Length: 453
Image (tube, rainbow, N blue to C red):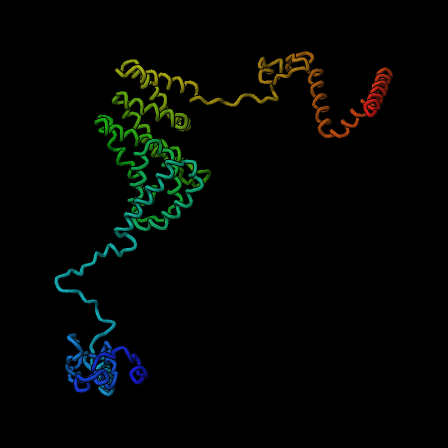
């Protein structure tokens, strides 16, 4: 009973272990059992350094059969208390004597370079800012290319994003270059690109000393403009790039608006002069690619250029048309290109396909205008006969149509009343019909009675 009743925690787990060889005997079973069931020592705190194991008893052998067991080091309760006190005292002394600091510099092992790239932490002109601006602009342009109809709804958001990112002269120049390259490289984007440039020239906030968005864009276009005589005689790739620039400049002339001191906005006069010089350069080397580009440019801007030059008292358009006629007669261009040039001359002779305002309709009468009834509608009578306002009986026939329409409308509005009238009309039968209906009712009643019998 004593060996099973032990108030010490963990008692009974080491009943077969002997605390000391002096308490174990080699006699009977009672003598083989230890006098006290002592438990193992408590674990020392982790922060306490290990002390000398002078208090631990050496391992001994138990004489129970052929099995050899090794006992754990034992310590007395007093020894544990002393060890804990010594450990707490040593920890306190280590904290007081420590020279470590939470605000100390970061430790860097020897042989490692602690250099930091300052551009990674620059908020304005850093490496990541440039990459983000380029990707953002390309995403915007790709979106406008695939969905040009969303320009009006998305342009305010695009302008706001660019105003938050483009804050320096270098970033503004990068933005101008990106938009110029995309506008001259992406097919059919020159129109949308010109609209974008016009909007940004008015609403972009950054304006460094070197010039605002519009001024930097015109400087970039001037670079290509000055190389026009070389580009028209260059290789196929150079000519293609130059032709894209020419068409973009034409779109830019139509879209770019400049504020005027009085009156509505006006177009850039410098672009007007540039377009005339570009067409002269294209006609100076009349190969098919240059002539096709000139035809496209004149179809795009011909009416506006012609009106502007006429207002200024200049005959530049007449000079260009005469030059085209000379090229058609003398140049060795292909038949298709020659046909395009002839169609262009014909288009200009018809005032670029525009229709001028005719006399007011109130001034036209059947007597002075043979086409007075040309656009009048054609009506049909009830039997399918067509007639127009030129027919003598037009008024009478047209009135009949109006009466039928009025009757039809009244039928739709008073449908219930009409149905009642129809039912009343059906109740009023002729005498012969009434007599026949009575005979039918009598015969039906007689048949019914015969059937019941």
